[in-house]
Image (cartoon, rainbow, N blue to C red; front, side):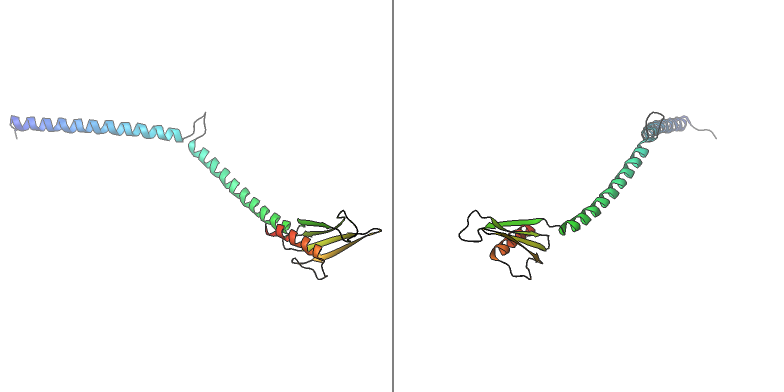
Amino acid sequence: MSLDASTRDALVIAGLAVGVLALVLAVVALLALRRIRRDVTLLAADDEAPSFVSAVARKTEEVRALRTEVDDLGALLARTRSELADALRHVSVVRYDAFGDMGGRLSFSAAMLDDGGDGLVLTAIHGRSETRSYIKGVKGGTSEASLSPEEQQAISYALKGVSS
Protein backbone atom coordinates (compact mmCIF):
# COMPACT_ATOMS: atom_id res chain seq x y z
CA MET A 1 0.00 0.00 0.00
CA SER A 2 1.52 3.19 -1.05
CA LEU A 3 0.44 6.59 0.06
CA ASP A 4 0.40 9.55 -2.14
CA ALA A 5 2.60 12.49 -1.18
CA SER A 6 -0.17 14.76 0.18
CA THR A 7 -1.48 12.07 2.56
CA ARG A 8 2.03 11.29 3.72
CA ASP A 9 2.71 14.99 4.35
CA ALA A 10 -0.58 15.28 6.29
CA LEU A 11 0.33 12.26 8.46
CA VAL A 12 3.78 13.67 9.16
CA ILE A 13 2.31 17.05 10.15
CA ALA A 14 -0.29 15.32 12.35
CA GLY A 15 2.44 13.19 13.99
CA LEU A 16 4.56 16.27 14.63
CA ALA A 17 1.55 18.11 16.11
CA VAL A 18 0.78 15.18 18.43
CA GLY A 19 4.47 15.00 19.42
CA VAL A 20 4.62 18.77 20.17
CA LEU A 21 1.34 18.52 22.13
CA ALA A 22 2.74 15.58 24.13
CA LEU A 23 5.95 17.55 24.80
CA VAL A 24 3.93 20.57 26.04
CA LEU A 25 1.81 18.35 28.30
CA ALA A 26 4.96 16.71 29.67
CA VAL A 27 6.47 20.11 30.50
CA VAL A 28 3.24 21.24 32.24
CA ALA A 29 3.14 17.97 34.21
CA LEU A 30 6.80 18.38 35.17
CA LEU A 31 6.19 21.92 36.45
CA ALA A 32 3.17 20.76 38.44
CA LEU A 33 5.20 17.91 39.92
CA ARG A 34 7.96 20.35 40.89
CA ARG A 35 5.40 22.58 42.69
CA ILE A 36 3.95 19.58 44.52
CA ARG A 37 7.42 18.40 45.61
CA ARG A 38 8.24 21.88 46.92
CA ASP A 39 4.98 21.96 48.91
CA VAL A 40 5.59 18.49 50.32
CA THR A 41 9.16 19.49 51.23
CA LEU A 42 7.75 22.42 53.22
CA LEU A 43 5.37 20.06 55.04
CA ALA A 44 7.90 17.30 55.63
CA ALA A 45 10.57 17.40 58.31
CA ASP A 46 14.22 17.80 57.61
CA ASP A 47 17.24 17.75 59.89
CA GLU A 48 17.21 21.48 60.63
CA ALA A 49 13.55 22.35 61.21
CA PRO A 50 10.48 20.50 62.44
CA SER A 51 7.79 19.75 59.92
CA PHE A 52 4.68 21.81 59.51
CA VAL A 53 2.57 18.79 60.37
CA SER A 54 4.42 18.15 63.64
CA ALA A 55 4.18 21.87 64.53
CA VAL A 56 0.42 21.82 63.95
CA ALA A 57 0.12 18.63 66.01
CA ARG A 58 2.10 20.20 68.84
CA LYS A 59 -0.06 23.36 68.81
CA THR A 60 -3.23 21.26 68.72
CA GLU A 61 -2.10 19.42 71.84
CA GLU A 62 -1.30 22.75 73.54
CA VAL A 63 -4.81 24.01 72.73
CA ARG A 64 -6.32 20.81 74.19
CA ALA A 65 -4.28 21.30 77.37
CA LEU A 66 -5.39 24.93 77.59
CA ARG A 67 -9.03 23.94 77.16
CA THR A 68 -8.68 21.42 79.98
CA GLU A 69 -7.06 24.07 82.16
CA VAL A 70 -9.84 26.57 81.38
CA ASP A 71 -12.46 23.96 82.28
CA ASP A 72 -10.65 23.28 85.57
CA LEU A 73 -10.47 27.02 86.30
CA GLY A 74 -14.18 27.37 85.51
CA ALA A 75 -15.01 24.64 88.03
CA LEU A 76 -12.74 26.27 90.62
CA LEU A 77 -14.39 29.65 90.00
CA ALA A 78 -17.86 28.16 90.45
CA ARG A 79 -16.78 26.49 93.71
CA THR A 80 -15.18 29.73 94.95
CA ARG A 81 -18.31 31.73 94.14
CA SER A 82 -20.40 29.20 96.02
CA GLU A 83 -18.13 29.38 99.06
CA LEU A 84 -17.92 33.17 98.88
CA ALA A 85 -21.71 33.44 98.95
CA ASP A 86 -21.58 32.16 102.55
CA ALA A 87 -18.97 34.73 103.65
CA LEU A 88 -20.04 37.65 105.83
CA ARG A 89 -19.00 40.27 103.32
CA HIS A 90 -21.89 42.75 103.31
CA VAL A 91 -21.26 45.05 106.25
CA SER A 92 -22.99 48.23 107.34
CA VAL A 93 -22.51 50.38 110.43
CA VAL A 94 -25.03 52.92 111.72
CA ARG A 95 -23.79 55.27 114.45
CA TYR A 96 -26.19 57.20 116.65
CA ASP A 97 -26.77 58.81 120.02
CA ALA A 98 -28.72 56.29 122.13
CA PHE A 99 -29.54 58.86 124.80
CA GLY A 100 -30.60 62.45 124.20
CA ASP A 101 -28.28 63.91 126.84
CA MET A 102 -25.13 62.38 125.32
CA GLY A 103 -23.48 63.39 122.03
CA GLY A 104 -20.70 62.04 119.84
CA ARG A 105 -22.68 59.21 118.29
CA LEU A 106 -20.82 56.62 120.36
CA SER A 107 -23.52 53.94 120.05
CA PHE A 108 -23.66 51.81 116.92
CA SER A 109 -25.38 48.91 115.17
CA ALA A 110 -23.31 46.86 112.72
CA ALA A 111 -24.89 44.34 110.36
CA MET A 112 -22.70 41.60 108.82
CA LEU A 113 -24.48 39.50 106.20
CA ASP A 114 -23.71 36.95 103.50
CA ASP A 115 -25.20 36.94 100.00
CA GLY A 116 -28.40 35.29 101.27
CA GLY A 117 -29.01 38.01 103.87
CA ASP A 118 -27.96 35.68 106.71
CA GLY A 119 -25.60 36.77 109.46
CA LEU A 120 -25.79 38.94 112.54
CA VAL A 121 -26.32 42.45 113.79
CA LEU A 122 -24.09 43.72 116.62
CA THR A 123 -25.32 46.66 118.70
CA ALA A 124 -23.33 48.57 121.33
CA ILE A 125 -25.23 51.15 123.34
CA HIS A 126 -22.94 53.62 125.08
CA GLY A 127 -24.21 55.27 128.25
CA ARG A 128 -22.58 57.55 130.82
CA SER A 129 -21.40 54.77 133.11
CA GLU A 130 -21.50 51.64 130.96
CA THR A 131 -21.72 50.19 127.47
CA ARG A 132 -24.01 47.29 126.68
CA SER A 133 -23.52 45.02 123.66
CA TYR A 134 -26.12 42.85 121.93
CA ILE A 135 -25.86 40.36 119.07
CA LYS A 136 -28.94 39.23 117.18
CA GLY A 137 -29.05 36.58 114.47
CA VAL A 138 -30.33 37.55 111.03
CA LYS A 139 -31.88 35.11 108.57
CA GLY A 140 -32.95 36.31 105.13
CA GLY A 141 -32.69 39.94 106.19
CA THR A 142 -34.94 39.59 109.25
CA SER A 143 -34.51 38.48 112.84
CA GLU A 144 -36.65 36.52 115.27
CA ALA A 145 -35.64 39.02 117.97
CA SER A 146 -37.18 42.47 117.87
CA LEU A 147 -34.95 44.97 116.08
CA SER A 148 -34.41 48.61 116.90
CA PRO A 149 -34.81 51.14 114.07
CA GLU A 150 -31.00 51.52 113.92
CA GLU A 151 -30.53 47.76 113.65
CA GLN A 152 -33.13 47.60 110.87
CA GLN A 153 -31.36 50.47 109.11
CA ALA A 154 -27.98 48.71 109.37
CA ILE A 155 -29.49 45.51 107.94
CA SER A 156 -31.16 47.47 105.15
CA TYR A 157 -27.87 49.16 104.18
CA ALA A 158 -26.04 45.82 104.23
CA LEU A 159 -28.77 44.22 102.09
CA LYS A 160 -28.31 46.96 99.49
CA GLY A 161 -24.75 45.67 99.17
CA VAL A 162 -26.13 42.15 98.65
CA SER A 163 -28.24 43.20 95.66
CA SER A 164 -25.43 45.22 94.03
